[in-house]
Amino acid sequence: ATTTRYYVTSKLYNNNKLTNGSFEAGNTGFTSSYTHYTGAQYATTPGNNGYYKISNAGTTLCQYFSITGVPNQTSLTPPNGGQYFIGDGATASSKVWEQTVTGLTAGDVYKFQFYYAAGNPDATRAVLRPTINGGGTLGDVTTTNAGAWTQATYNWTATGTSATIVLTNMTAT
Image (cartoon, rainbow, N blue to C red; front, side, top):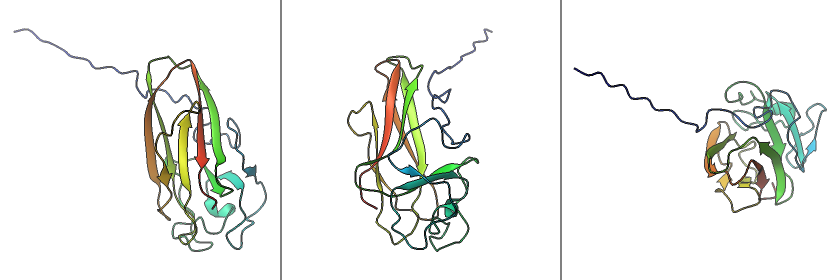
């Protein structure tokens, strides 16, 4: 009898190419058109638009970013531990997050994924649009779920050794 062994290997999804992709190092490695806020909770009502904070507790920025959407309740727990980006809206077509990723191989397939959740369940929902190198949209997502994370995942093929990934909020929230 002959023993045959099969092995499957993949270059797909093995290494995180993002710098500070889980915000473990805080406010570094990306740009945003929102203003980084370092103070205490500022919102007593929704509408303080255009700010963000890196934290493991959304209610440190805005009282409505809780597991229930009710003010000052327990914050959403970060997916996979660590910290997350808490954004409190801005004007339509505002750049939430941007990063240029290097060390890519042209022709290889890469995955961009992120988690999103809504804050106040009664507020206008953000429509988030990811793009690669200013090209067409990868597919919009709407933050409809207050109190739980939803994962967005996009596969794309590199056309060079670097790519700029942008996440844009298409609505005024």
